[in-house]
Image (tube, rainbow, N blue to C red):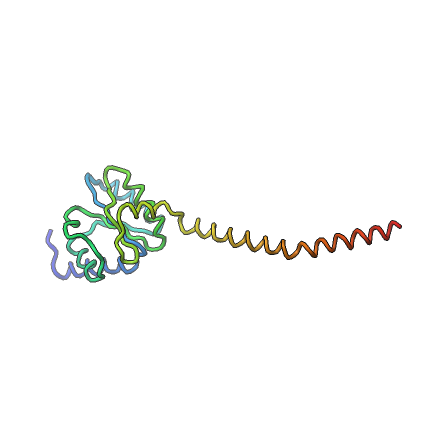
Length: 174
């Protein structure tokens, strides 16, 4: 189906909006794709504030050119899906990595901060803890140091109070 120039402009603007609002972008190729597999992938990505879309390669290349993002010219010859991470890139990368374990989708490359990353780097990103887990680790580290500092500061006063109490109890019994 041919698109009019106006429809193509709308599509390119939508792609620009997705790219501008994304922390990371992941490109997947697909073979033997069914609507059930795409719907399942979309459902999983929505849960981590991500989206996946089948793109028109030539129109998506226009957006990449405008943003100055690198790609190989022959790269866009296959059928591609593009995943967008709108908040937590490792969470979306994990879902992308999980759905690529099927024989339907295959990770091709990604972009973080408009810099190209390889499929292996996308998989490494997927192995990182998610944002809530990282926040928990950081909070635990800060809290452990703070509570240790408080114990260190309070201990001399507690020891002094124990000595005073022992002397007062000794004085009362004598």
